[in-house]
Image 1 (cartoon, rainbow, N blue to C red):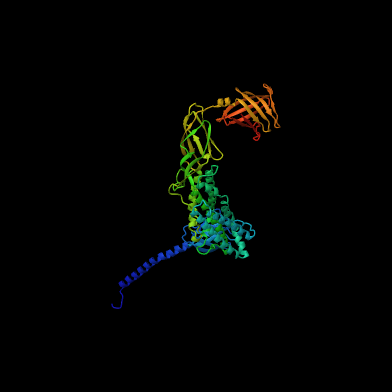
Image 2: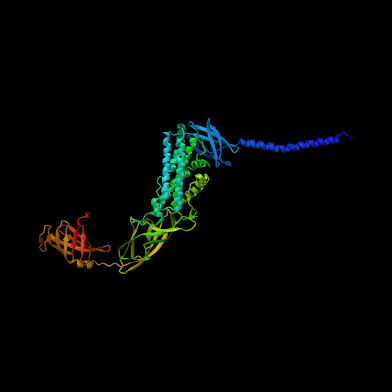
Length: 585
């Protein structure tokens, strides 16, 4: 009927209304569920690792934050009622431990909708001297680094690019130090005390980084690396090379060992302004001081790395011993030579190759770690703080240089002729002395191998085969003996002059003598007190005359020179080079 709703229609409307409400409820349920999940996420706790967990008051701490995308944020919290500002920078939480008594504490803060906790064990704070001493200590260290970089910038052996980068870094750290010094001077006495406590709490690892570079001296190394030695001695380039690697490794291992501390400093630097955004103003200025000291040391490290990379390291080719293709020796003749070879610079692929020896492999391994760890940190610095000196790259093609080689890395072997004895002596000046001998009656051809080996640097050896000839032995002793017979004049240092008659067969007699004040005296023939004996002998291809006064038990004589008008200068007093006699025929 009009104006009325029948029971069936009413029942249908009721069912539709119920169904509509149920659908709306289903649509609203996920929203409630999301809100509940989000609320749960806000209270999610994440425990952070603190390593050994031991920190001093005012020590700079950096903790890794897992799965955090928020960067350059700040949050405030407390530890035992002490206010702590935590900076979230590059997925790291950076803060300064507040002034707490020794004990165990918990750091708790919220970031990126998660709550993080970290267990901290606080140890006793270092004692503090006058605050100004801490500022001055860091300033002196920075000034030393700046001076070193300025010296690099004027070093004749460095490339133009390396000198320019060193000069730019010296200017950068000079400007930063000037800025922080001005800010420090404006601090109150209480703030300067806080500044000193921050420096003191972090002084050990910063000093370790600085002192690791104190022994670095590349002056001689640079000269040796870029040209053959022109000195009177053959420089030991290989030792200089090992020294440079050791210096760089010492510094690099310290940097890598303190990578967490280093990261905290680098991450704390602001995009705008100069004062790091960590803790109070005094703390920020202290961190700025530490940053400048560490980065100036790092620039020195990377400059030294560039020196090492630019140096010819690995043996390449063209080993030689003397400038000849074939050599000729008189029997028992001494010849002194300097070895030379070409050496190549490090190339891409040497890191994974098998050629590098133990010392060089240490460099390559640490180079890779340094480039990965330190390089990535520096890249995250704001541009205004980035150093100009950068991590040098290896060469993509062969770049070689020829230089002299110290004899300690040279060996002689494989003498081809059994009738030849070849003796090699490594002289203290770095050269090699060779003596070829033969007892054959004819000239002897032979060959020998010259080998360069330095396993500490490379598994590769350089080798060259040299051809040579040694002339047959010619003994002229009988000729000299025949020429020696006759009258000789022997002059003693005191001025006395003896006349000696040498007879064939090795006998003779002093026949006359003249005293210094004059007066020539004759001696009877056959006087047993004035009998002499004599002989001519050969040693190392030289001929000598020896005359002995039988009654006096004295021998005079020496090397024969000026044949056939022979002269002999001898030293009858053993161990007294100034007491000499002269025999003239």
